[in-house]
Length: 102
Image (cartoon, rainbow, N blue to C red; front, top):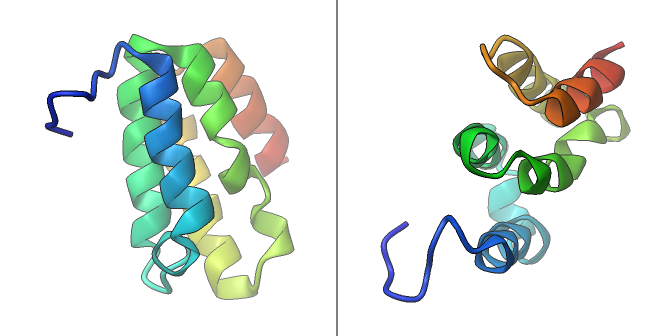
């Protein structure tokens, strides 16, 4: 993201931006093509190296994949699988992903 007031090193800004997308833009986050889930996963991958604690907090919406309809649930699950295959996944994230997939 490019804006003068945004920095990946500022956890409050990162959290505010991503949580706003997930919670306030429900239509796009839960888009039937899975693009919202992929977007969140892309951000989690980026944060895995910068601030894994924030990434671990932001993963929560994907962990609830079993509560959604079959199509969306499967798309969310696929993003969790994508994360599980990431080399160097932070322990906090890895634990949450593994628990959700089992």
